[in-house]
Image (cartoon, rainbow, N blue to C red; front, side, top):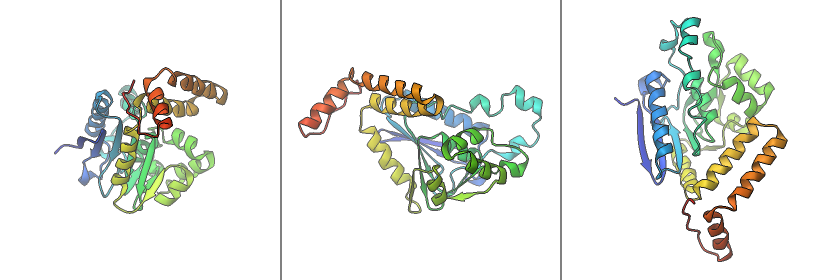
Length: 256
């Protein structure tokens, strides 16, 4: 059975975790499959946005503990455990939307944090419970969580391993939008299709600019943003969009 399902629909690449008996836990095979799928979506000109989901019952319960139990410091260090494949999701240039139902814990929560938009249904639960199994978040949990929700809240969640519901996750900034149970994928697809309807160069510039806000001081971020703004005026799509607005019609983008 394939551990990851892939499809392209309406200009959207969809990757679905498919290890239901293991609660979609992340193992080497699933991580490798997801990395390959995202690379394929990135290289496919028919794909403008990406959705990652775990199906209707669970997003991802975290790393596969069976693969971790017997690791030593030497083996983890030499194979560059987690780090080797840790940022491929964060490095996607195209917008990535997480559609979450059920548990998104440990590595599952970290994957959601790497996505650009997180749509959660009312069953969704988020947390970094690694402290309870004698380790720490290692896929960016301590770093991205602190940047997303602040030091105090990140400390509380990581030090206690407390699992929070979708509404709290939305309130503190992990989740973009909470929807009715079972509607997470449909709403994620609606948003992805909307994004896919815009100029792809403009969409990529917006994503790159927002990411710069997390990685640069404010002055440098503002400078980057303004250079991106100036660059848009070299695009045919910018001219088309502004003409269409003035003429009260829908623009026809050429991604150029």
